[in-house]
Image 1 (tube, rainbow, N blue to C red):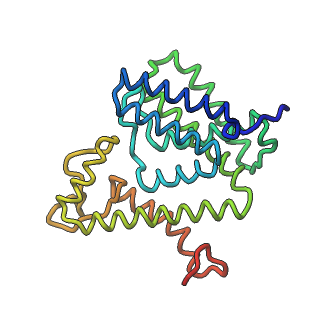
Image 2 (cartoon, rainbow, N blue to C red):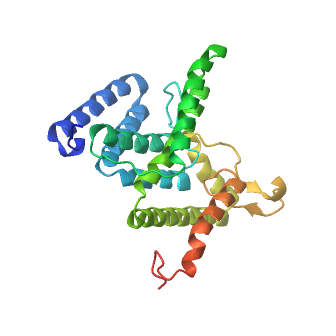
Image 3 (cartoon, one colour):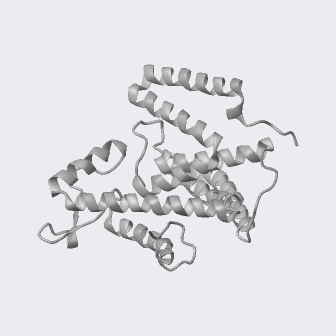
Length: 262
């Protein structure tokens, strides 16, 4: 297998990446407007960062899940991918690139890896042969891509988090991101309803619902307000906090906690 160098360590590769991104952004600026061009430039910068260190891509996935789980691209490119779709695609794509180029010569597996690969292959063939039975809509294509990316991400996590050091770093980021999400939710809950609603409506440019989005117990404004953070639904946000609580709780009694207790 041919060993290729890291693209980000090659001056020519970096120049090509910057040039291609700039030219493409210019074309999109002419036809799609400044917002579309800015989105592409940000995507190019994110790709460069993930190519340098794939772990930063994992951090990006965690931050998106915690802070902007339902955000979508503010431009129409035929389909409307979410920020989470793009973050997952970046990590899975860079991981696959490392395998193809020979920078990573071994894959750490688990008992679930082979069944997942078989499922992915069956799903791809079923999707291809099933196209004759109905139209291929942008929504259907996005949903299928999300399914494949989500399952593939499990394989990537198993391979990457093969040491305690890596796993601990990812858990630390997850706990810190969860804390940030909780602080935002508490802040919005403490604000007057009108102010909190105005803040959340600013996210409508990113695909979030607009209008009156504050939630109340039994959907009755006369009752207590429910904390939703940036998760739209209080039940979704509550489930997210429960999941993080299962990670944070044991830290209270752990002999070697991830963060100092004082």
